[in-house]
Amino acid sequence: MPSPFPGMNPYLEDSEMWPEVHHWLITVIAELLVPQLRPKYRVAIEKRVYQTTSEDSVLIGIPDISVGRNLSSVKERSNLAVASPPATPVTVEIPMLEEVEEGFLEVREVGTGEVVTAIELLSPKNKRSGEGRRAYESKRQKIFSSLTHLVEIDLLRGGTPMAILNGAIQASYRILVSRSDRRPLADLYPFELQQSIPVFPLPLREGDTEPLVDLQALLHGVYERAGLDMAIDYTSEPVPPLSEADATWAHDLLKQQGLR
Image (tube, rainbow, N blue to C red; front, side):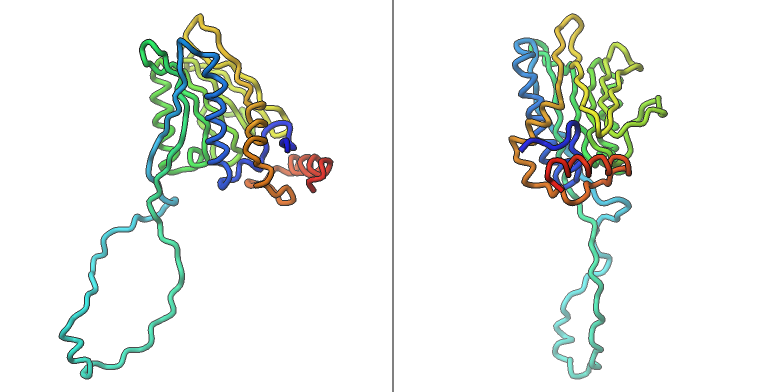
């Protein structure tokens, strides 16, 4: 079943579904690029690993007091007063360290092994405060200070967008193409839910033919190949929720296709 949305499918942004979508997309982007870039370049699938906990949480540590069994007290139990029944506890959730792996792509020059272009597909943790954002922002700044191009794809409405100096530009989704030889200038492709995802060129070494990345076609392909329609309930509202105008448009679109 094809995706009912002409552009980004907002139901894919759910944090429960996004890791699968993320994995599929970086794989099919690599599949698209490899035959167009060889033999000069290869595309490597890499991963960033870090540990994180829930926001403002306190890590579990070693207790200050150890409670053990005193054998002598067992022998003299008759001398102890009868204890009151224990109080009823409240069930709470404790912060646990979570190891996170985020995949990304690197276009490397075969002859030198140098990373020519990094391709990042943002995850929800990259757009929320915490270790996930700090880890990505640190890498982002290192790339901006290097000779590596950066393609940053943001298909998530939730969270805080990555920093650009043109703060007046508002968009639900965006693709940033930062060429090392043009910094601090970069090409931004902003788009909305009702629009198709823009086609953009992949920056390479000067003089090389740059392949076009049709992310829209790739996303539609992933939707069908992965059978994502079977994991989505279109009678419910997407998470995060849509604006009033987009919600009305999406409702009419889904109703026309018999999904509502």
